[in-house]
Amino acid sequence: MSVRYIDQVEDGFYDGKKVLMRVDFNVPMDDSGNITDDVRIRRVLKSINFLLDENAVIVLATHMGRPKGKVVKKYTLEPVAKRLGRLLKKEVLFLNDCIGEEVKQTIAAAEPGTVIMLENLRFHPGETKNDPEFARALAEGIDIYVNNAFATAHRAHASVVGVTKFVPVCLGGFLMREELEYFARALENPLRPLTAIIGGAKVSSKLPVIKNLLNKVDRIIVGGAMAFTFLKGQGFGLGKSMIEEDMIEQARATFDEAIGRGVRFYLPVDCVAAPKIAAEVETKVVPVQEIPKEWMGLDIGPASATLFNEVIQDSRTIIWNGPMGVFEIPLFSRGTLGMVHNVASTYALTIVGGGDTDVAIHKAGEVDRISYISTGGGAFLELMEGKVLPAVKALEECCKKFSESEA
Image (cartoon, rainbow, N blue to C red; front, top):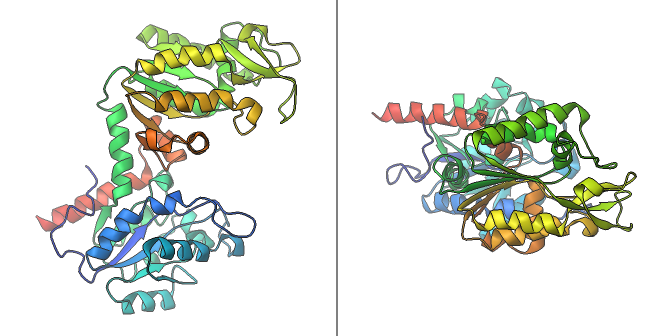
């Protein structure tokens, strides 16, 4: 099975039709309710404008935050509707709910070219529970469903899974296509050498990813606090660095498996150490086996950065998830930001996913020199683990039924 996309239908297909598009406009906002980064909104404009040109009525559905099935004012989507209107340079009609008779009547009466924004899906408990009745209510009066929310594709929620059972036509949006196709280029048919860069704090959350990558990649670079669990497995004394004691044996076994498969496995050789995680604290660069007893490693050091860069520059495809250290603190950001610059300077296909890595790329000012930055954190990780994403599976099944009905 495969996903069918919004430009893979006959001319005039959308004329006057009501199109429900699931997007991910879960954008960051400050304490005053102002949007601080609207990249997620901008990434969907291409699909919205395509449907506007096709004379459709567009109904946008998304979540914001975690209101846990209750109406929470700070998670209202009204500011998002206003920002979208400015970006589209047209009015976006905001509704105070996402289901119900008033919503149904408004959608039914809408003229082609209208853009409607529904209120937060997660104000209803049925969304996260994938409740069939909530899914049915979302689909009322809808002719075509479009999933353009890759970032939520790992969730079995009503607006991405359940709703596909109650609409006659399902299609994928342009952003969904970009996400799935870039990922396939990286891991299914890559230019080699293929290098995976895996960072972050916990081995327990990333070990399934590393294990799945062992039969796909040529090299693996591991950084961040999780590297210390691997290093502990090599017998190093690492001071008070973060180590998951119950994962040491699994980390060692994974390292040994990588070597046995011929995958080159790179760990930090030095680090920036400090007695505690703080913005103002004494630091020193030391080899990993010489971290003082009461200190901890909080970033990769310059020798590690040089080693990793040698690997990166000799790669044809790079896939990256997770920072190299506690990069949100300037003292420990150099390793991650340096990695961004090094990855951006290669001639490789570079694909980056995960919230922290995305933030680091924007912070380093290298957005335009990365081949593709995924909007998905959890979804990106689950694809890297080799898992089937529930929303993508549901979309494929619905697309298949639609294609069969045309035959």
